[in-house]
Image (cartoon, rainbow, N blue to C red; front, side, top):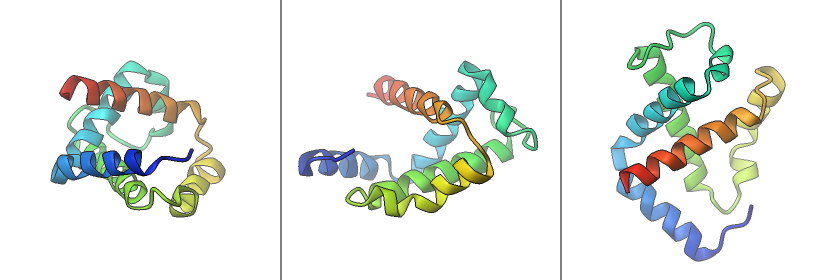
Length: 114
């Protein structure tokens, strides 16, 4: 996906606006993904998936960190996220549809927060 200069600027402006709350929002998105799409929980049998658990918050922060890395490298996402992609595809064998689920939830949250 290629973003225009205006789109990249809009993404960066939004990310700046989220500030230090990115981890909180990512955790909420993860929790809502687990609720709306229960099959996503199968990839986390080792975690306490209770909403608000320390383990869900920690993984939410990992999601936030990955998204922050993506925002910082909007001009070269494949290189910036290659290792993370490889981990999820080759080692963890995560079905790509799960990322669409998470993306849908993130979009819904963004809309609800305005």
